[in-house]
Image 1: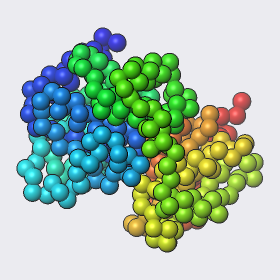
Image 2: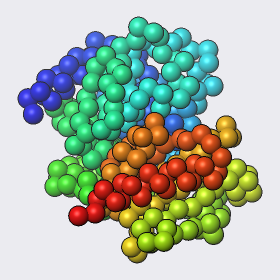
Image 3: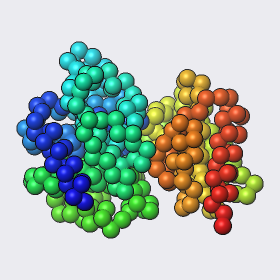
Amino acid sequence: MSRMNDSFREATRFVLEGDRFLVVSHVDPDGDAIGSTLAVGHLLHLLGKRAVMVNASPVPAKYGKLPGAEEIVKLQELRDASPFDRVIAVDVADVERMGDCRSLITSDALLLNIDHHRTNNRFGTHHLINPDAAATAEILYDWIESMEIQWTKELATCVYTGLLTDTGGFRYSNTTPSVMKRAARLLEFGVDAPWIAEQVLETLTIGQLNLLRRGLSTLRLSEDGRIAWMWLTLQDFSESGAGEGDLDGIVNYARNVIGVEVGILFRQLKSGAVKVSLRSRRRVDVSEVAGFFGGGGHARAAGCTVAGTRDEVERRVLLRVSEALERMDP
Ligand SMILES: [Mn+2]
């Protein structure tokens, strides 16, 4: 605990000593990535600093109404900006996950790495990393508290969004007493919980619905019924008018089938490789499976990109998941 306090103090000093910051998160951002990006943006503004928020991917529509979301710029909009020598990366386990945002950063930049992925490789110069945190937003909550600054509704809303989405709507095993206590405090600062839930959990785009329909039509089960998987092709994307942001949550339908322990979504990438999203119900650590293929994530939610033909990738991943399941057996 006291070590974390030291880290908070160092992180605060890092922020106070700078003037202009780049705030960045991972490609294909989720609610924790966007919520944490916005929370750091609000925080920097409250401290009188200049903050430029960027993401290599577009902000998914469901996060577009969060306070400040319209200020997250696209990479292209910064083409002529001078590079940044102070950077805050949120929810980024590996510098590669920033995508082309790396091009905005000087080689000698000071970088504060705030993250909760167990696979984080400490690529920054300053670190607030806690793999036991449910969300990057949970680390931000504690850091902000340590600064004793006045919470605003906007700041609280963005932190709350990260807590809500990374716990699957306060449902996953990372929904700890600590998460609920922090969420409860955030409500006291004026967070509109039903509004956020409606925005980020109860909203489907037509593209998402079309993708879901196509994905479900490919769903297959392993013989023992413990693995379910779906495929989405490039054609599925083009014909359903869907983008990256529309993939959110589709893999859960495979995992949610009764008896299934691991759900998998395979999707073709333009590069020819296959992006694999893995979700487990209770026992299999899918971050280990993803790690084997050079990816990462959390015990219950992880992903990787695998090169090879459709059949090859499917066979290799299913084999690895089966082995993980066998290891789980008593
Ligand atoms: Mn996260």
